[in-house]
Length: 326
Image (tube, rainbow, N blue to C red; front, side, top):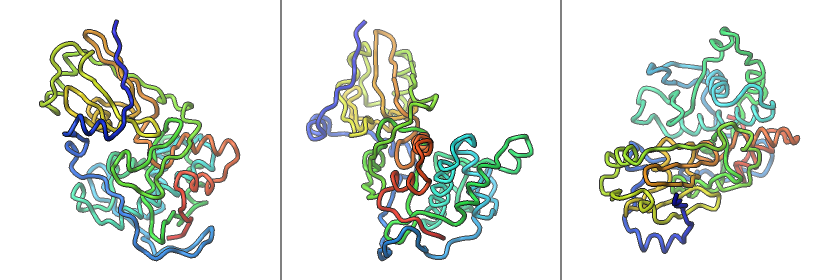
């Protein structure tokens, strides 16, 4: 059985060979943007005050706009996004990241996706949300989540005086991804950093296998220009990878495709993938779970288990940021 593995190549060479690029933005309604804050830099210090923040937020829950206290919303996000069994310092780090991202999103205004709400419960757009009170009533013990949110109440991360886009994900590979490699936005505080501990996640490695016919059917609807005639061994020609390992672009059927678009189209856990083929089957093997940018939840777990406090965890994943108060 012949196998074809992606081969890393230089970006300039790839673009020379492959002038047209199909990206995830071609499928998405709104591109992800992370404008660098323009506020005046704050004085140095571990904890400072940011501008006065909101006490309530309007969240679209199950399609209905609902007004919640900010801290109640943060509690629901933390309850949905990270395991209550994780070390408390990791949960505190998640609480600050969730609160920061909410305040950041508020500063950008309500999007077209939910014009009657500041935020929503769709993790693909804002963040997942779990009603902590309902979960507790059903027998879930969220006391550690609630305590972690209370311990960090009002705390957010800022860069040059403004709330940051504190994105987070489940588990990265050995390094997190830089924002520029995932969303084409070079953000100073969202750079690639070493991130051990991801392999503790049960979904750290994953495999998605399709028959050649199923692959052709999916690709025909999204990318009709791709030539996937003949056996699968000839469909993939070359790829360009980020420093952290994710596929930036790959030549598929004569068309350059972004790795994030491949991930979304085929439901892969991450864009850090390799592929094997035979005469009638294509298999993607992935490393990591999520987009890989910002805080890795399993990385935070590992750091907490090694004795790191939540502020150290945050400063590692969001470099050159300041812990502030709304």
